Length: 601
Ligand SMILES: Cc1cc2nc3c(=O)[nH]c(=O)nc-3n(C[C@H](O)[C@H](O)[C@H](O)COP(=O)(O)OP(=O)(O)OC[C@H]3O[C@@H](n4cnc5c(N)ncnc54)[C@H](O)[C@@H]3O)c2cc1C
Image: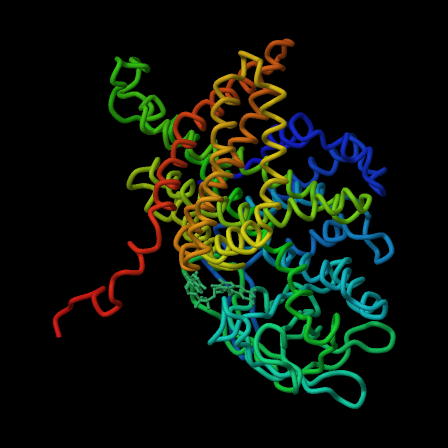
C-alpha cells in the first residue's frame, strides 16, 4: 500500500540550513512568534495530520470520487470529517492577520504545512488551498466591511472559497468572458453567467462557499480591460454575519475526469446571483492576479508534491523488489535475485525524482520567503522581492509541474507492470499530477509570460535581478576547490541564460513569433539554471557540515551525491533546450495547416 511520511528532516535542511529561515524571521516585522521551537512544534503537528488523517484518505478519494445529485455534491468518505479536524486544529488561520482572527504567522511557515498536506492528499488539499487564495484576494482588495463579513469566516475555516474565471469558450483568453454583472439599487450586482471547471465550487465540507467571480459591467470595454471582480456567496449573509437565504448560484454538474477525483470540478450557474464588487471597476483581472499568483505557487507545489510522493514509494519498492542480478556481480547472494535498486537505470529514475523533489523544495520555500518579504518588509526590500517573484512564479509553476510529472512517471516506471495496477497507487499519482501543467495557466502560457512579459518587456532587468544573485554566489565560491565542479558549470549556464535572452530578443525584434517559438525551451532552460543554483547552495551546506563533523554523514553525503547527479545528468538538458530555442520559428510555422494530416477521406 502506498504511504506518505512527512520529510521533516529535509524541510528543515532546506528552510533552516540552506535558506536561513530563522535569520529571515528575526528581521521580518511581525514574525516574532515564529521562534525555532514554535516552528518545530507546528511542523510536527502538521506532519501528524498529513500522515494520519489525510494520507489514508488519498486512495479513498480516488476510488469514490465526488458524487453529484440534484445540485448537491458529496465528497468522498472521511473528507468532511478531516476538514472538521483541520478547522478545529486552527490550521486555516495559521498565516493570516490577527485582525481578522488569524494567528499572524508568516506565509512561509504556512507553506511548510501546506507542503505536507498537498503531498499526502492533493485532492483534499485543494479545498483549503482555494480558500487561501480567496482570503488573500479579500485581504488585499476587500473593503473593511467585506473583510468583516467574509474574511473572518474564511480564516476560521467555517466557510471555503473558490476562484471562478473559466467559461466554456474561454480559459486562457479571459478577455472573451461573458458573465454579466448588473448594478442594483442596493449597491450590489446581479451576476449572470455560467462558469466551468470550478474547483471546490460545491461540496459538503463547509456551511457556506465564497465565490470570487470575474464578470463584466454593462458598459465595460471589450477584452481584459473590461473585467471586474465580485464576491458571490452561496448563502447571503445577514446583519449579524451569519449565513442567511440561499443565493442564486448553483452547481449544474461535476466533471468526470482523469484524476483528482476527490476534488469537485463544477459547472457553476449564476442566475442573477447577488454579488459585491471587490476592487475598482474594470480592474478585476489585476486584482485576480493576487489570487492567481498565490494559486500558481500553490500549483508549483503540486509538482513537488507528486515528485516527493513518487520518490518515497518508489525507493521503498526498489529496495524490496528482487529481479535479476547486478551487472557487476550479485549484491544480495543470499536472495533469489538482487533488489532492483542495484541496477543503474533504476537508480537513474530514483535520483531524477530525488533531484527534482529536493531541488523543487528549495525553490518553493525560497519563493514563500519572498512572499513574506513582499507583505511585511521595508519598501526597498518589497520592491526587490516583488521583482524576483514576478520572474520566479512562471518558472516555479511550469518547471516544477513538468518535472513533477516526469518524476511521477519515473516513480511508476520503477514499479514495472505493477506501476500500472491501481493498488500500488503509482498510476493515481501520475493521473492526479497531470492537471498541474494545465490549470493556473498551461506550461505554454507560463512560458510566454516569462519570456514575453517578465524578461523581454523589462529589457532583461527582472532577469538580471536573479542572475546577479547567482553571479554573486559563484564569485563567493569560485576560488574554493571543493565546489569547483558546481560553481564553474553554474557560472557558465548563468551567463548563457543572459546571452540566449539577448539572441532571442534580437530575433523577436524582427519577428514576434520568435518569442512563442522559443518560450517553452526558454522556460525549461531557466528552470534548470534556477535548480542548479539551489543544488549548488545545498552542496555547499552539505560539504561544510561533513567537514565540521556530523552524526548525519549519510544525509549530507546523499545531498552531495544528488547535487553531482543533477549537475552531470540533468543540467546538460539545457544544451538541447538552447539549441531548440535558437533554431527559430520557421521549423514550427512553415507547414501549411492543411498538411498536418493526410487521412483516408
Ligand atoms: C480539473 C480542473 C480544475 C480547474 N479549476 C479551475 C478553477 O478552480 N477556476 C477556474 O476559473 N478555472 C479552473 N480550471 C480551468 C483551467 O484553468 C483552464 O482549463 C486552463 O486555463 C486552460 O484553459 P482551456 O482549458 O480553455 O484551454 P485553452 O485556453 O483552449 O488552451 C488550449 C491549448 O492552447 C494553448 N494556447 C492557448 N493560447 C495560447 C497562446 N496564446 N500561445 C500558445 N499557446 C496557447 C494552451 O497552452 C493549451 O495547450 C480548471 C480546469 C480543470 C481541468
